[in-house]
Length: 410
Image (tube, rainbow, N blue to C red; front, top):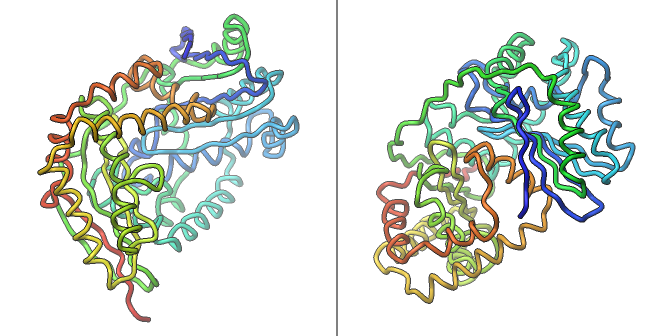
């Protein structure tokens, strides 16, 4: 896909992706997330993401929230372990309005004390709600198990104790230390000439004060395998298993993405869904996921089942893992898997907001953006030998950790 990048003097990059649609999508991505928090500041990056919608130097909460919604647009945000993202979808005439609002809430929020206390209550309710959903809570607890003692293991929401202790000074220090202008991308996909987009983007972002401070990120140590069972008053067993694995920059990244898609990825025809759910009726939900990060990665598998079926589910899963390790795929099997994965990626291009966010992240991670054909070629280049090596490194049950939430009587 065609794209253009214009870098402002302060380091902020403007990413332009032309599209003939009447609907535009925009985002501002900041290379800063929960991994950048200090140990006593758990939940701070997510807290800031909430608070930028509360009050700026010239707008109150209502004015912020209605600035785009009043013209039918959608505005939202999220925080991950490594990124903060604010995004919007809108009709083409409102590009200037959207980028002006992005600038206002990211660089001119004032974080008043009354809003801090109010939003702490909202997030504490969010934490309580999340804890009531074991299928969600187990994912964060498992990452804490994999990355014990490292920021990657911390819950993005924080804890009730950490959130309650956050201050305005914490917020301002975090932004100063982590919102590096050379690691911020403002991206738009829409029907605009490049010159118009650059003019509007420059108008709203060239005045941002440069911040090229050095970020102090520490790579996690390899995890020690552990298998933990936690008794809970729940009706169904919930299980996570997995390991630390390849980063964004590892040559096996494409291969593991492909392997994950075969095992438990998108769709009902994944190997684990067919073998564990469809053939034996053991688990209603079984899925796997590979999340590559800047200096590590996470391969994880989740399933939920009745407590008496947990052992059987483990055996079936390990059986499929063993097949991958000991019986290399044939060229025909590998080609079918590639065709399926490539087709899913191509269809995913229709999600334009997801596309522009992905392209902006790629610009931060790799300082370039591969077109679809380049992405497909990386998948096509994965060999049978690569898949065998990946399976033996990632799917060895002796190196996989697990966490089980096990139902007990009241």
